[in-house]
Length: 489
Ligand code: SF4
Image (tube, rainbow, N blue to C red; front, top):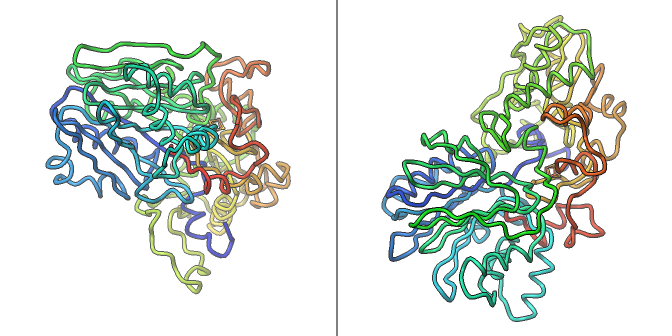
């Protein structure tokens, strides 16, 4: 992203972004309204577009729109158009080349034995390879999303029944997938064998629910039943729920970044409460990287739980020294050059009275390009801080993610081209400390990282990817690749 035009976008957005949330419900008359609420709770997993497919007993209804759930899924669309007692939905964070309507999920197609809808959180790392093979056999693709590949694999499978065709399809793809699919008779949930992305099972008065996170169950008062196991497929019909394990068992590799940033702090994923993990991350950070200071200040909102943990462990007061404006949308009007150079602070403002004359420790979840950190540090200095230290609640992010996360080019990741000292100079702090990879593992409840067989996916910190990257071999530039194969996540 060019410096000249990044004030707004970079200040608003210098994070890795999980690209999707999925939600489905089976057996409840107001299904689409429930899905709308579920997707609203999952809005943090994707803000640019959303879709819902419902089935009313005789036909499917599809609504897919660009924008926030609350803005686009109006009463008229949800109540009047999306009828039926089963529905699935998806919210996405569109990447380069992927913002078009044709890439919004769920994907829906009329297959030989009826309608089939699918919503996907994750990214398939061999979709282009499979797609090319299908195209040689005459397949036509109508989107640039990897998820459409799955639809084709289900459609063209030689297996006899839908369950077997679905299994045939998911066995041919690689990478990260938490899927929610629906036909006239069933809802299917499935996690990849490594369990990279989350997917939970819930129950609302006898109606089964599949959702990316537990916060989507809470919003509708549903009961959390359990996480789907890595490699598990559940099939929900009018008769009940069936659990299948179609993959060879593997050592699981859940995305550890879900705990650092992606998941909502009030969610529990893979048996751990996200807020508690983030507080423990802060406590580990305080132990590993202590600093003499007067106040601990979170970079809101994602740095807040770690800052609380840091403050409690270090015995240094926690203060809201930076206030976030929650009403800055990604589509906020881009100012012209004359306004841009005024240093407009759209998203964050320093709370001067808290900061003036103090030695401040800023706690943030990660540093991606470093542009936001640089501006925030300058803002805190301008507000009169005597010293500004920064502590980061994760190891340096030095590699791209290929599993359904919007990542800048590797060369734009500050940690891929600078030492910690150089980064400290770049963002102009008095000291900079990152959590170690072992510290992160301790915070999630492990003794440390098992370097032979890591317990999580931590590739964006270590560069050690848990799967083949068939479509991406020889490349390290996700942006360029996303033009070829936009993540369906
Ligand atoms: S590389 Fe792995 S740990 Fe990093 S964001 Fe992607 S899935 Fe998560």
